Length: 532
Image (cartoon, rainbow, N blue to C red; front, side, top):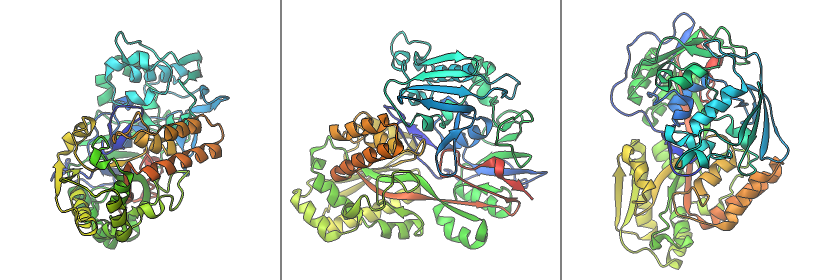
């Protein structure tokens, strides 16, 4: 999931986790025009990854490849539940100390045995502050992470004990019932000794323990070729002879190549091309729900946005369904909750009237809050043209429904957008999204709204206490009750406005069948694809 990291645990926003999911930028594709499928192999078009060391990326484009090269301890089943993969079991009596039994008899692509030490060493490398790994914060749940990220940094996580050749004992700094889900995140993959000795070489030619292995080195800005690993002993045996991940800098070029059969799978069709794609591809157009939620955040350190009634008024003045039809062809899902429908704990219409277009009620709340003085600045990045399109509609709604006349757009280059938010330089509502690192309400609520994590400057002790109770709960139903109560508080306060959940809009060529794209970080299940 393409994610940009901020301070705090697992803080990932969509598009570069924890995660901005962006359309492909630029105007030209990379690579040649060879046929997509050949001799039992197939080709997938996607943007260029940033890294292939599992702990040194939070990009969904890297995850596409990493998830095929590596088997994590846990994986997600079709319903988004964590189930063992490289682990035999992951258990805990108190949600704080976890016992992990690693499956024996599994090997890396270079023949080295996959052991408990393979995971412990990889995690220590990821969590070591001076190493600068991009996914470092994802290990902050484990005891000893703080000591590895300050002066005279420790070299190992005190909470990770290799208790036997295939036995790990992991102590967290506080109870966390969602830990098995966290173990599905790509950064928790194991590493062979050779990889840890030379991370730069490993980035060019990763040595994993998964169903595919590299066929040659990474051809930067061109392609990454994978072939089945003959020694793979896990359950994900490929049904094809290999997959090539072909890099594109333009979504339109990738779509053109899909139409022409030069690639076989495209996981994201540009919004402007979706009506045509539906018509031309027919049953080869692949629609799916996702977990990516767009929202407007407020800079609450600015007193002009301090009144919750003002924030609620802005929410009710926005016609989500109208924007969906005008910009997203009616395919997106207007928000009815802070959680997307694919996540356990989502409640239909949890947001109620506060997420429903009601100009009259919006105006009443706006006047109750004392209106708005000064220029209303709306911030968004230039990562996708759709952002500017729907921001213009939002601005018109606020002028017409609330009477805010002085509205200005602040379109910021994508490369600068998240540094601007981290430095709190925005002076008005800003567009952002959240793409889950793993499908848990905790990953959304705590990371979007927790006092230590959120970008809005919002704090609420009752909210934080409920999240803490949910994390300690051993029973999932009990945990969901606490998460839902926390969500109700955030909806009542409205420090951010949920807008809509993205729709996944993919396509396949006539050369391939059994193409399944999950709504989770794993994306395309490459092993299941069959080639005609």
